[in-house]
Every structure is written in C-alpha cells, then in structure tokens.
Length: 326
Image 1: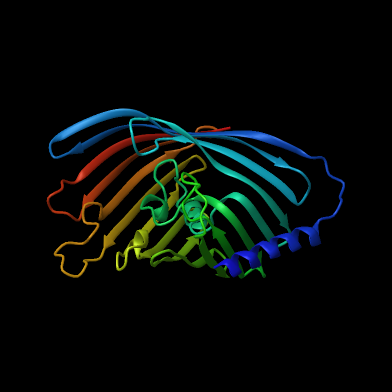
Image 2 (image 1 turned 90 degrees about the vertical axis):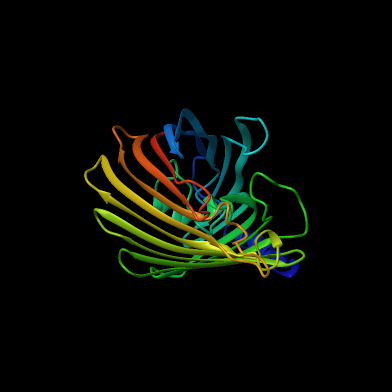
C-alpha cells in the first residue's frame, strides 16, 4: 500500500512539473452557492408527519491560476446525522487540480470518482443520493489524490488513493483506500464503467461497482450493481444490490423520472436473519422536475421504502423538493 501511495505521489509531482508552462492567461475565480430544500409528508403504519427541511447548503469558491491549474474550496452545511445538532458545516472540497489535454490530477480534499458518473446520470442529487453514497458504500469526497487519463474517444482510466473515511472524518492514519476505474464508450450514447477499491486493517474491505448508461436526445437510462465485502472491516459482512433509474425529457423545462433501488446483506453463519436486516429493503422514487428559470429546479415526487424486515411498515413520503443554484 505504501509503495502504491509513493508511486502515485511521484507521478503527480512529475506530471505537474513536466507539463507546467507559462502562458498568456488572466487568473480569476467565482463564488458559487447551491441549496437543497423541501417540504414533505410521511405516512407509515397509519400515522403521518409533515416538515419543511433544508437538506444541504453548499457555498464555496473556484479559482483558475492558469489554463491548466485551478483550485476549489467548498463548504457543505447539512444534518450531521448524530447528536442534537440540526445543521453542521464541513469542508467538503479543498483541492488543487491540474488538467491538460486528456490528463487530470487532483490533490487535497477531493471529489472521489467511484460513483460520480452514476450520480450525474441519476441527475437528481437534491432529491436523493446515488446508490453508493446513500447506503454508505463510498463517500463523495475524501482526502487523497487521483489521476485520470482519456486514452481516446472510447476508453479512459482513473486511479485514486484516499484516506478512506470520507470528508466528515479526516483523521490521519496509515490506512488508505485505493481504487481503480475504467470507463468505456463503445458506441455513441452508450457508456459503461467498472470500478474496484480496497482498504486493509484487521481485514480487507473492498467494493466493486458496475454501471451501464444510455443517453438519447429525450431520455436517459441507467443501471448499476454495487457490492461491498467485509463492510466496516468485519469478515463476511457483505452488502449491496442494484439501482435502476430513468428520465424522460418532456420539454425544455419538464422532465419525468423514476428510480428503483434494492439493498441486501448476507446471513452470517449461525444467524437466521441477514446482518443488516433492519436497514435492508427496496426504494421507489417517481416524480416530475420543472425548471422555470436557470438555477431553479422544483420537483414534486413520491418516495417509498419497503423494508425487508416484515416487522417494519412500508414508508411513503410525498415530497416537494427544490434546488437553488447561483
């Protein structure tokens, strides 16, 4: 692992020094803000509850030092998921990027590459995270370094070495998460990707992801399979499943979308139920997105959760989600 990390760091340094050139360029940057908010009503087991929520607020700054070098810093304000705090601020991105021709390098608190393609194809992050992010198979950002190279119009490859804890937990240790991905576009409009990563402590935790997407003029289709082995470094604790999603573009401002997820875990030796039974199940999403003006998206939608545990009730939620970006 240490040899791989040293090799990647050496490649990063050599690449940046070798390609850095003085060019006519006016440095500059811009701030950005993105807000996810919603109103929802949830129905389950004969009861209902309604709430207004602000899920996420992103704000930050992007700056171009030259044609090839740029930087980005981004704060993420959201629900921490623990304690009594309603909203907590995190630094989600803080990195330097080198990008020239078909070669890209990122270093710092970077965007990870294991499911960025899938998230873009899904297209509705303000409604729901993509599969790996939603079920905590991988994080969307982490401390580390990544390299990506596009060989031609058909194939590209990428590699990342990261802390492995995600952007909410930036502790330093000698354990890294190393990942490799290949993206193929065999024909126009069709794209496929496979990805594998691993991290070793008392045992080796690894994950695999496969994706196939088709993007036509008026619709998109995506299907992915994800699996984590030895989750949280526990032997034989496996978790994963499939996700299907589609969008139909009814007009310039109107889209129809749907998604289905399946999350399953395995049954350990000596047990009668799957180890993650309380959280396993199927997710159903369907809705309409309306974009009245640039920077604003409004989406009335339905979200249903069907637990694998027969003792839990089906959860139905009606949402009115909104993304504001400027």
